Amino acid sequence: TLTKLPCGEYYLSILVDGDLTHKVKESHHTVGIDLGIKDFVITSEGEVFENLHFKKNESKKLIRLQKQLSRKQNGSNNRNKARIKLAKAYKRITDKKQYYLHQVSNYLIDENQVICMEDLNVSGMLKNHKLAESIQELKLGEFRRMLEYKSNWYGRKLVFVDRFYPSSKTCNSCGYVNKKLKLSDRQWVCPDCGEIIERDYNAALNIRDEGIRLIY
Image 1 (cartoon, rainbow, N blue to C red):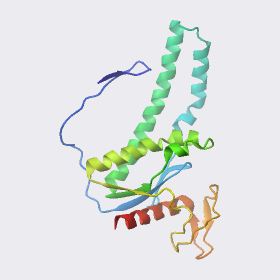
Image 2: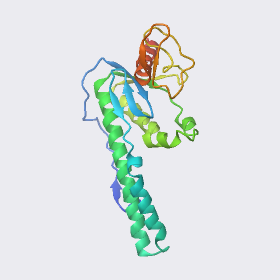
Image 3: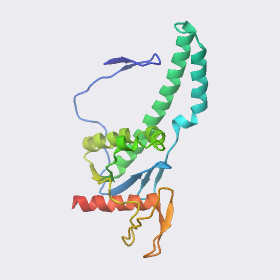
Image 4: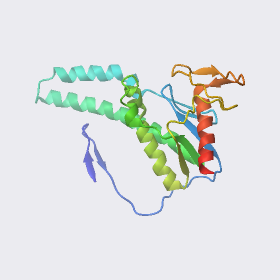
């Protein structure tokens, strides 16, 4: 399939029928991952993959290019040049996002036999106007799709924990559920056992434990 992109570049897609040449190392490890806005992925091993804000970091440049485009006369050669320049800027951002998603998903697949994550309702989350832009920036749906097809390719297991499971509100040490926890509370102290809880790391631990429970 030959495809022409808005920036003027061409891509040729070729379907190959055969075995995958890339092999992942043997692993018996299970990991839980929590997807967030502040940080992109937090694992039950305490690893943090940052939200790199690719589009946000390029916002001034995009605004400048959009203004340049709006000033050009419709149908003119200069307007077409400005349109291609803007399209190329968006493509660079998209390419950076895709590379980062592949980088993180490949690492998780390579290191773990079982990956546990929340069954997020991404389309529903996008209806929250305060979070919609950040969620679109993270491309959570695309990240999930990558983990799904790569798990199938390499014989890994992807386990989805119910989206209503209180992973952030439950103390991983004693099981106490903090029903008063707010989204702004990044850290809290368990009133039952006194454990100081890092919200996202605690959620990843609970997602891992719940995923293991669902398997067995």
